[in-house]
Length: 132
Image 1 (tube, helix red, strand yellow):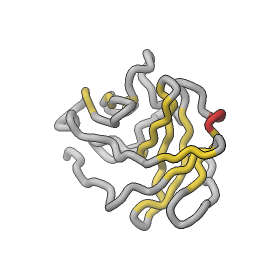
Image 2 (spheres, helix red, strand yellow; image 1 turned 120 degrees about the vertical axis):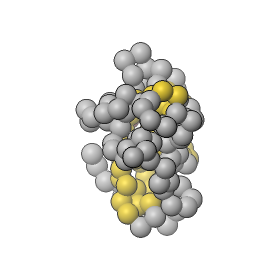
Image 3 (cartoon, helix red, strand yellow; image 1 turned 45 degrees about the vertical axis):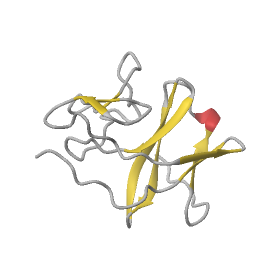
Image 4 (cartoon, helix red, strand yellow; image 1 turned 135 degrees about the horizontal axis):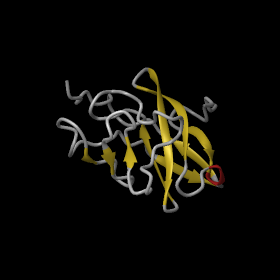
């Protein structure tokens, strides 16, 4: 995983669009609320979506195997530890342990310009809505 260089105070270079084919992902580090956080961008049916790499059930990384976020059929983003499933377009948990269902991954706003993907930190602190 590479730490990408900072573009300016509000957006960070993640990579190039052509580095993430359909069904694939790319992890990156971005400062959020004073801490460097691991995030990821996925290409789901040609559309890019990005989230903080943290399960809604327990704050663990979703990918047990590096950069593998999708279920085998490619329909959902899955927590490899708890088998929680998230809708790629919205980050909503639709299947999982405890009270995870109905909660959302923290979305990272993206901007694409000249084939370069830029990410912006989400507004406000990261949620603390994890199950115990």
